[in-house]
Image (cartoon, rainbow, N blue to C red; front, side, top):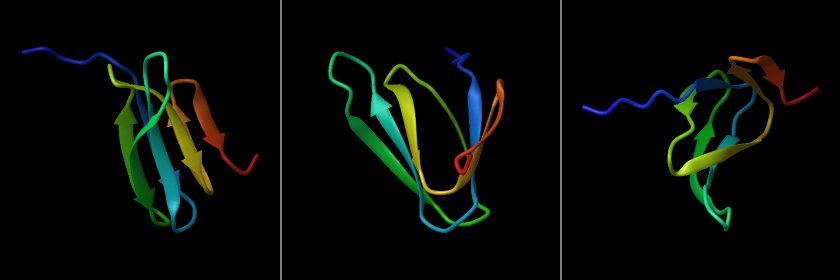
Length: 73
């Protein structure tokens, strides 16, 4: 069984309708997945062989191994 060792990150919505958008790897970066979170909801995710970047729209706190990031700052 293969295990993915990518780092996890956590997104916590501070308002309704926060969008977490996954962008693809490769020569053309494209949107490939979108999740919508409501206030207080938490999403735990990780980068994969298909996802190279994440875009967050709305007020949220993102926790990574590098610390907390607040989208309002």
